[in-house]
Length: 430
Image (cartoon, rainbow, N blue to C red; front, side, top):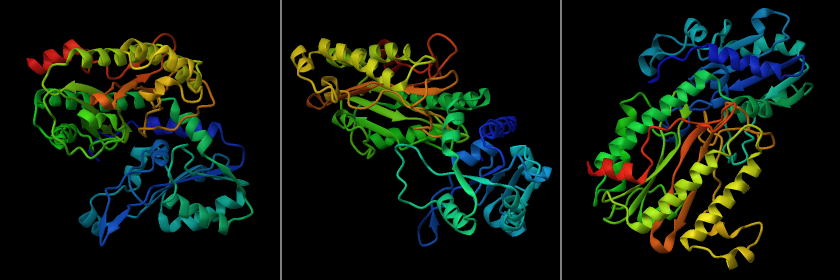
């Protein structure tokens, strides 16, 4: 891995949090992701399933974590099953975890090879009444592709029909959404790497460069700072393309007079950052561009103040809508008649600000979390209002990553990244 080894105390604590919410006499099983084939003998780079990583720190394929706190034998309370390594594998694929390295990584003392899984689980399942299985229940998930976890669950339930099956997802969504200090440090590192990418762009951006050249500059900065790369597919959208919310072609010329919207973030140690900044291609905002930019920035600053403990996310988004409505009135994009005649389910402001303001972020860019429970200290959210005006070839979105505090406004993990109009122009023209 490119990242520095993570203190295994994080994974020990995370398992304790999961165990605290299990019902008695239960075993929980978590699988790694597949290495996904493309065609012929080609594969995509391996990306670990976030849940097994969160609970163990294991970042390699063909791995299984088993948690059974009520096991009769101590060695069955926490177990890792790993792909057995040898000299041949080391030569062709590189170093894999052995039992000593698995302990150092995860804090789990009992590691077995995968070919021992069936025999060990026979003993375990004879004692357990319930089995926690790990399904993807993110509300925006596309679950058409069958994962290694999906195949495992299907085969396991067919082989062991007498057990009661429970879902790990509600527990994982609850505990993953509140970050430990070690996690916040990793996320801060990801945000710091993102800052380096932003500052590189400020030096590079000028009329007639290609969007993909900007993408390449950012990627260079990420890789040289121990990141695997982008936490998600980057949006490098100049001019009218900024009004396409999920524009990812990044293949157009950056024209003099346009504003470029860049939505990107570095990953570090599997943790995501998520940033959006908008810069004038020629280094100077027009008066209209500045007015729209400052309107979005005002909404962002006021929205941040609402991300406090005890707030429900649904209520938060409604309040942000009111802030945006006021700014769109001032910009002349909507009027009082539009508001009087609006559909309550799709308010007038949605014509120019059609997406949500905040989402959970952590191991996933759109991280897991429960919208049915109030915001808590230690949760991390994006804050990303925007205004999109296709008829003006102008889209502005501004986004940072924020940690909810015990009291007061959240902590901004991206506080050092340029955001004010004057600061951006000064840096681009210095």
